[in-house]
Image (tube, one colour):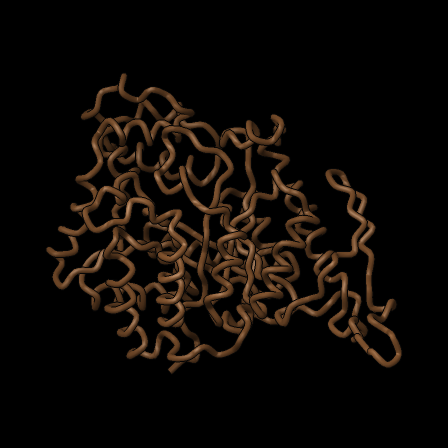
Length: 435
């Protein structure tokens, strides 16, 4: 039996990842700002031996935003609090490289990493012209073709700052009065196109050396950026063939940047619906799907069409004519392009966009079978689990995870204390340290 194990992350989304989950009778309508609930979820995931708690984020909201994104905690603040009530699980938060400062973010993630004993990770995202974030940052516009150039410089600075101190730089010798070894403190002195940062950072390295870098870009520049910097990549494939192709592509790209193919882990997004029977799983899906009206669905979907009023178009005819109205060329563009080209109507497109139907639906055995098939076929190294509905978390942890453990596919104990070690990733050496 192979020693390779499935890695599992959980994306905690408060009131859910769809428009209507908060309306379910068993849902807590203020879950996105209920720390005690987040604490309970985090401890359940850790008891189930998950690798990662993942917190998504965004910098701009409208009336079309998902309920969870309208009223929620800032990721680093939330993860810092969760670090005090967990011991082993990784803590990964989303921060945009477009609208933040390298020194501040390097310091915040280094602090989270140190206080958690080496469990921090940063999901690096970029913000473009179309997402509205510039409206909250002095109107600063970053063109799509330039945002990854900026992000590249940003990551180089951040990683350099994380190497400000060698591992044994702080002597703290009370008898001699030597607090640190000046030869092991390193100043970055970065001067670039977008940033000027001197350094050094005012916090030492954690036991895992540097926080783990996550990335989720699906566009061509996004893939190259991830292949150069990411330790783990978040993907949203709909089929096993798509996922295999994506993982193979990313592993090949990593090699072109002088890395090993095994330096990158791919986490495929899943939002399974578990039932004692297939019929019960379908019933659970419909419980959530039926809570959204077509008016709300159109309103939500309009955000992907530059906030166009979609109610003016026929609902039950093939909506291929909307293809030319999709802005951008990113992963979202690709998804809606494929959906429209498949002949779907606007009604189908809107309802499925608000309550996506997971390819992982059925009994616990069926879902475990599918996860095993994807993993063993090389479609993913792990899975990013997004609970579906108020029943989704307990269903997956109590029904599916034990089956994976019985099959030897998932751990029965944490292997180490740091996130990197639990993911099977090497601890990066300080670039200044003598070999």
